[in-house]
Length: 139
Image (cartoon, rainbow, N blue to C red; front, side, top):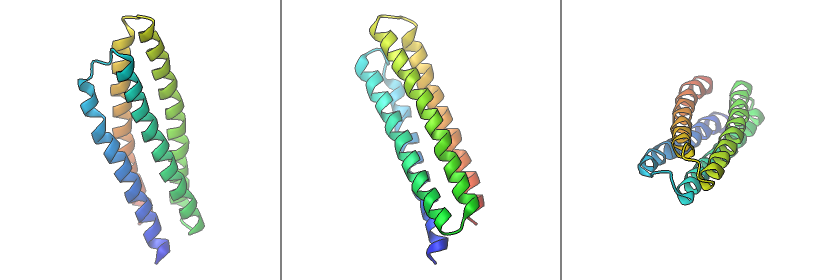
């Protein structure tokens, strides 16, 4: 029984976390992104999102592997690797642009805003992929 419940439960928890952060990010677009506090808050939200998705997917992958669901474990492990790489790129890009904003670079603010929107789009695509792909593997 647990071998059937755990994969589905891990997918539900993963989708809940992704959905929560997906809904939390668009209201931040009303920020002007022109103060260090705005950039720091948005960076922090993305960082928490990436860390939580990696942790949930890693636990799910380990549990699925232990219960004999190799395909699902590999898919969740792949998600961990993808989000790890995405986090490294996004955090370094945001830090670079926040530094440029502090130095007074006028182009950094719109670039940070575009990066924020790109991150949101990537997260929505990621959520859709997980919702579609993981549920196919869990059945």
